[in-house]
Length: 482
Image (cartoon, rainbow, N blue to C red; front, side, top):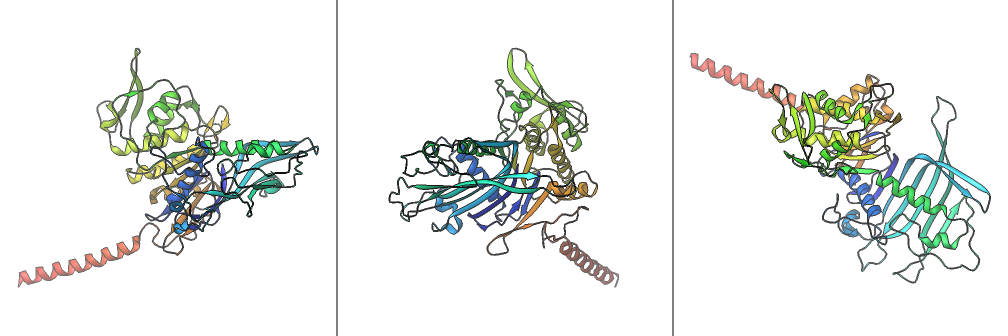
């Protein structure tokens, strides 16, 4: 789970400021306010981690990529190649990391990692990204007292920094420095390693040149695990079909546009989920059906095979007031748009981070509010006796969604510390990201002006217009009597 994030000089953001992320993290703001850029940045890093090109510092995306960001100049703030994209984030590890230094006979243990990096363009005549530096810091959390917050202690750190006087632009040299860890070089190896792997990876030379640097490969791997746990669902999901084919494979997610939704339901047919500790454990498909019912969208739902000899399936639903089951394309568009959202919330593997844009799109206000309850269930869900530990990072425009979360906080159905909300304000120059301060009663202490439009202004102007209209109608009626 990502706990902290800060981005500088990326697209419209000079500096997002520090962002504390919770199991449910919401981003609000007007169109073109920059809130989408935060998710795009995380997807940029994911695409780079999963790219086949180990030399590409950043992979901006291709034809079938989730995001397509263009060249370094198109990504950097104000398109000024003199700027460097800087960022840092901290994430918790699903299992504790232990590093043993056999040379110095010490060990280090951590439960979270922070990564800092700066990526720039060192050649004004070129337009590609290159690493200025990156740094890993390992932290350990210790419970002091039950009523006190955890205290994070820096265990050790290691970084790669480009030599500013490096003569070769094609193969620059990098310095390796560690703090609280005594790196020991092999004798006779005085040269410096070359560039990193992508934006985050220590090259093999670091291990080859030192007697006790094997652990950097573990750091590379933990970083890759983080971004492989990230999935993305865009704002417009794919259209529904009357028949679906499934080859028996298990998709990694429902896909960026929900194209794997039905395959995911079928692949999860043997999974059992509960909505929290000591809650009833039910089959996966039943979870999805119940959530659709709770949102008031259907009365019944099933995915069934047409015949035993064919791997074709159909989705049947019963809506309120209908005499029988109908095909998925025959129901409202909103249901087809929210189905991938529900499936991904419970299909994603444990310890996943799910980025979603406008999960509430095309839903009635009542269903938008009910969707917030689904998200609460998703972060509380358990499978195989363990917490699923899902994190949801959501870009939304829905007031009804937020209002339901506020209510559930006041009702103690979800703790305020498990919800974080931010408002992207483009009225300020440069753009600012304001944290919404939600208290234990669900109140927002710093409600931004015109957050969801000026409701009171609309009510006031409606009342004034009604008074004027009644006055005119009364005057016309009096003139007719005369």
